[in-house]
Image (cartoon, rainbow, N blue to C red; front, side, top):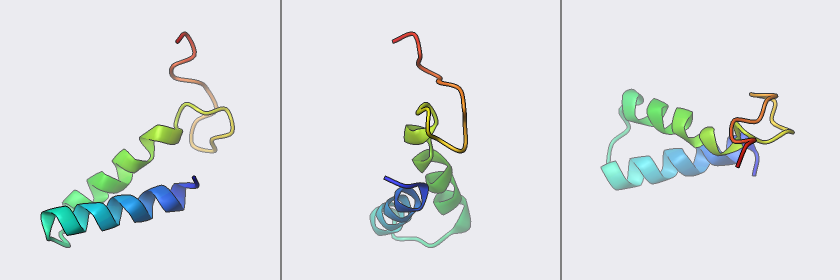
Length: 54
């Protein structure tokens, strides 16, 4: 999935579960949604693999 897809799913899920549109929880959801892509070699956010030894 692309980063924008991760953001959209995180924003939708967070706002539905918490029932809020407050910027802090939604911002944290966006930051957390980027973690699955941070250790892939094709990621534009991080060029080094975090979990390379596993």
